[in-house]
View (tube, rainbow, N blue to C red):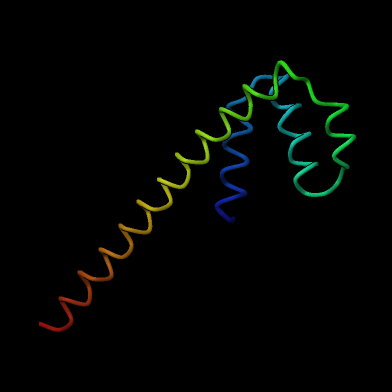
Length: 86
């Protein structure tokens, strides 16, 4: 599962009902499934800004988690290489 898929699933679980609808709408628009005009006509102006703010924070957290995971993997490989050279 890609980082985007993991992030999308985890983020969607944290949303309220209206926020989930807004997120689904945003996903459809970003995937090109609906036009910009359709997106604008269906968008709830009260919910969308809140959902987008949460989305930005969740993306940053997901990326930080991914970086930390990669860093641990690199550290483990470096440690293994040091042991092999001794």
